[in-house]
Image (cartoon, rainbow, N blue to C red):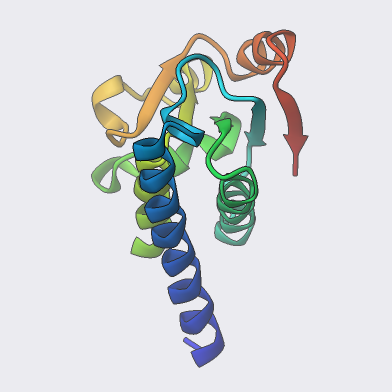
Length: 159
């Protein structure tokens, strides 16, 4: 793997850790993610492809949004269609994602990012809830979830 990619990945994780530290401080001071009630900002990402580069772009964007809004943001990443594989455990996954992608999912989930798994896609590809990573939250339908979240004021980002 080229040195540039490793360096970029380390910087991303470092940025997530820095964001977490700032969020912890904000929480302790009563600002940002520790505030009662919904965040001032809300965004939902559509993730519907299994391509690792595509997935990393969305995960990176979510981290940038977290940092920009000092964690005062609710982020949902809706995974459906072929994108469901991001949320499938290694043993059942037909794609062999590098550990870095799974580390990003875990890190973002620690900062409150929600990863929704489309129940309709799960039925189609015969996945059970136990086949999903612990960060995944099954929903009835990714498309329906996108509609409902937009009704609640979430900005919709399609890649």
